Image 1 (cartoon, rainbow, N blue to C red):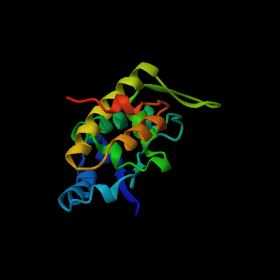
Image 2: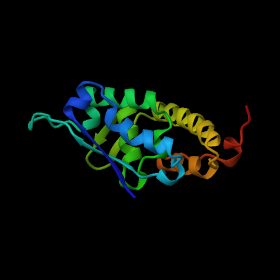
Image 3: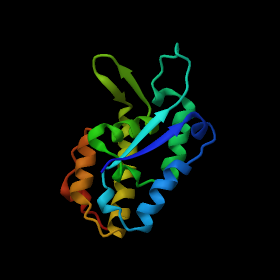
Length: 158
């Protein structure tokens, strides 16, 4: 079941997370985290000048809203619909990048590596607290972003 969160210009300019909170709170309260895995999509209706060629991830106000979102829900990539490109778009909101017509999005390699390692650590801890196995999920997420993590790396203890 796909879960769509609608955002508009006002939500973004006001750094208003209520559209997300209204979806995430029931999922958390009902203990439906595992069944909501990779179900979340964003429908972003951000008004911009028709002459403005920028992608949403290139607009500072939109990126700032996603930074605020990531601060509140650092484990959100678990819920994002990876197959529909939501993980890539979410990553683009948080990681410096460039668009190329022929090659698509090109993330800053160092920034992407830092972002990925941060998400690996956050998600590993959070998934373990939710009693959800994490190793294969984290390996899949890293592969979606162009990295191959080993099982040994993900088997760290602390």
